[in-house]
Image (tube, rainbow, N blue to C red):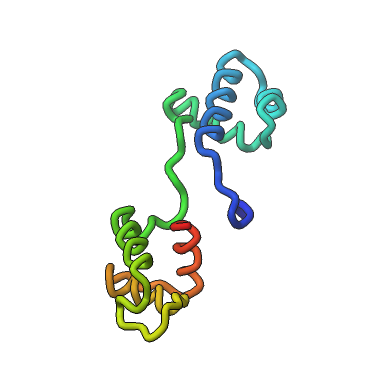
Length: 128
């Protein structure tokens, strides 16, 4: 379930699709017609129709972001990025090579948050 790795959801486009479906439902189209018109499964339209009935168009607004909340704030990420640019030697490492375990240790030292080495690579990609 979910998106392939590296694929991000376009929350604005998803909201627009729900809003369009809501407008079509209000015009009196059937759920099946709306599903075909906006390119989704009829069960999604059924869920949206229920929400439309309970909360109106407001209920079809942007969904909250899914997934676990980030452990590091944007300010902490900027601090990590700045520290990485200083180089490993500045933190007592013998060589100038950042490894996943060294970055993990740096993150824990600077923020108190401990990550698994595999997740460190995701953070590094996020920082470019």
